[in-house]
Image (cartoon, rainbow, N blue to C red; front, side, top):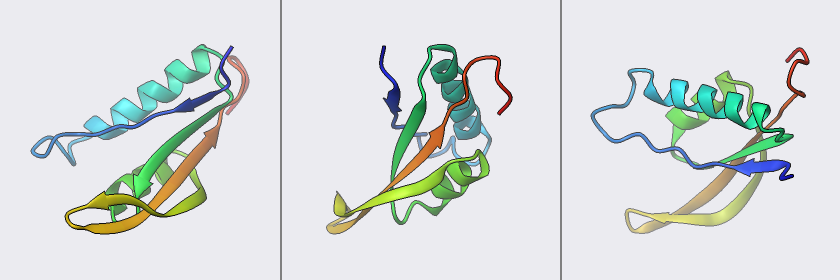
Length: 93
């Protein structure tokens, strides 16, 4: 049984800021919990403030950084790893 889920979520421009990302992440948390995962990791680049805010709001915390882990729009930026420990199914969160 796998214990860590490493998940990437992207929402297409034009569909952002209407709750789709929140619902996707909540659904992925529920699915991971149901399948017995103990930990979820979400990578995010440092300038993606909206995603970092969303993950924090849902209970994720920054657990690490990879300097220059992303290359986008002609420049390097840090990759931030956000993580959440999952309770066992049926346990209180």
